[in-house]
Image 1: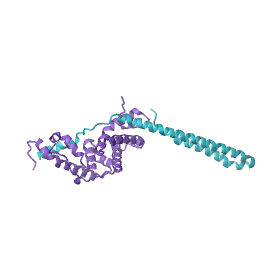
Image 2 (image 1 turned 90 degrees about the vertical axis):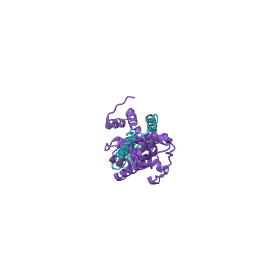
Image 3 (image 1 turned 45 degrees about the vertical axis):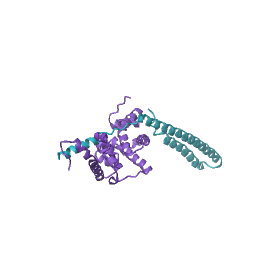
Image 4 (image 1 turned 180 degrees about the vertical axis):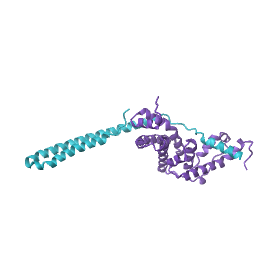
Length: 190
Length: 109
């Protein structure tokens, strides 16, 4: 499919004019962002796909309300985040606190998993409470700035920074012993 | 300190690495399909509402004219003014309903 709408404004204008190719492009451009966010929040794969579709339907319905006060991706991420939280609220999912989470991964028993450090870290992230997972994903994977994450999550900037710091510390504590072996030459951490 | 930095670097590198998530095949087509089904449904509702509004206003207009003619034979011209008002309001109302249900259609390609 050859579509070429340069910039958010041209793309949004084309979608609002009923251009299906533009809508296709808009969805394709933001599919990875929405899918990654939903994947971090929702566990059930069937729910994920339906929710992704619902999010883009909502984006289409509300597109005429988008006033370019933020980036299109930030606005779509906001819709995705709220839709995912509403979904969890409907399912009555418990938002556990970070310190109460029991990390049950068989780290010692699964050497292969630890060998692939990135996969190991992402598996650990999936065990963090939802709000921590989200902040980590939005900041590191999607590259959103603090003000953008504030807009998406509606959390104060201090809370966002705190979640990010605590999540990273938790990951550091969990992964550091396994990384020491990889970082040979620097010696074990005392 | 070097260890700290090296560790930090390694962790952030892992965090920034996009998790291997399978994308839903045909997401865009599925969404567009759902939008089209929704718009067809809305269009059908709109057509029905317009049809009923047309019939209702036509009936109201006919009744108004009949009352107007009847009153014309019974009363003086000054008495006809309210019925002229009713007729104008009927036509105006019909126009408004049609406008309300005819706009905001993005389904054309």
